Image (cartoon, rainbow, N blue to C red; front, side):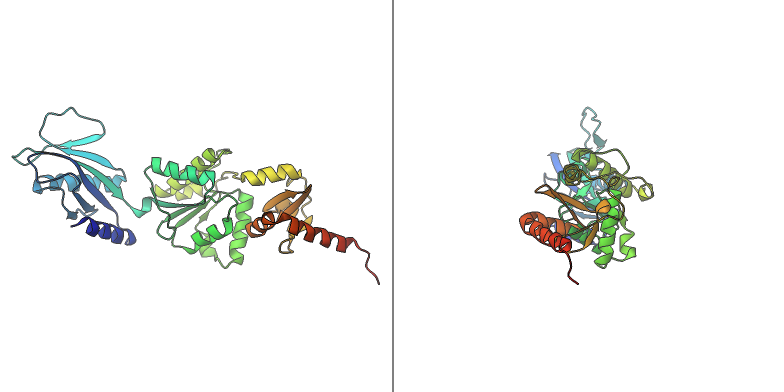
Length: 330
């Protein structure tokens, strides 16, 4: 098979949710019919497509590839009769051919069960991608093809990203957020038409309670949640306290405003200057401080609209307040 044909086959296998291993010849010592760069795809049932040398290496390659698929771990394999010192990270096998050539192959298993999509450009999102690479978890930018999606937007387009993930085919959607914010986003999703069956796939917060505060710590805890799902332990996330993953903006603006949930009366309301909705001060999704005043918002959309032109919406709020304080004539 040509390289293009192998790529096409890999794409088809992926969309059929079928595991496979890509085998690449990385070194040869003559005499051997294999050549550096030769590739083949091995399916979980042992079927081999492509070329990695003659029959002398085929059985070893198939068994090694099946083992890599089962374990989900890549490996380096050497088939040779030469006296070479053993290496911990290289599996060595005898060459069955009388010619006694040598072949070294890299075997990379692929499974959509080990594929995730990380949504967001936040520091925690970038750290999560880095950790996924270190953990040998496949990454894709296409949320429609990943069985696991991690939403790490952290205040930048949370609603749109979460809705997109829940409308897709992902079996599990993990959200980096505090429990309070996650519940608000669940309510927003219901208003957007996301049903309870779709919401049942949502895990929020994304991982166990580790007291995470920095982006690196938050990403690490979230990836523990991802790993639990990949390893078949999704139930470990159910009922967990989760990470209190407030965004830096949430923490910062509340500090500036001098308000906390414990200080605000449960029934105290603030009229969102963007959409006109009465927002509970104690449970606002976002708090923004502008010109010495605190503004409370019910969703990402209103908050981002406000910060694009705070002067405009501050004037609207002042006008509304003046109207309410003006004596009403009988």
